[in-house]
Length: 264
Image (cartoon, rainbow, N blue to C red):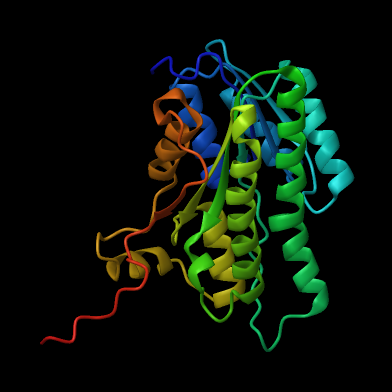
């Protein structure tokens, strides 16, 4: 454990499992002692916070539907009141339902955009407002996806929502820089998480061997692992990343824009 986050007061949405929980654990390994997790799942979230609350760590869980802006603002306010301030914020919650340009309904579009773009925007807004009012610096990391560059056909509304959040990231970084609030984003590739396992089974009829089969096709023999991304998130939220803001980092093993080698 390092002490780089010893003064950090962190709020992580989508923090009850997968990447959000991995980031929370990394922040704790790097010294964070006060952290709030937020997600829709009350049972899993409360269990995760309880498991993190040891060795001097105070972890709290706040349930929220990120598609409800009033609830989102109240969640940020509650986290702020609990910890005294929020100096590190991770926008990790997401709706990953499937839909293409041909079959996405207006209801699905709204459900995905409300969580992934609208809810994320107003959560970041409230964190920034409170930091400015408190007169202290803060850092935020928005969890994006490599689908911002295009995405698979069945991810049309999801890709659009993450592309919106990518623009929000850069726009907010510019607007908040003079308040010493840094905002960066990570374009995460195909990742091995409990949520992805559920998605593969629900939407793609995948069997128990889907992960093994998928990883066998990858250049590095694995999908992206949450712990790897968590290390980058902790860096971006900490002092070692200095003045970096408005940066969008692709975190994947497939290079965007590359074509298969035809010189064979």
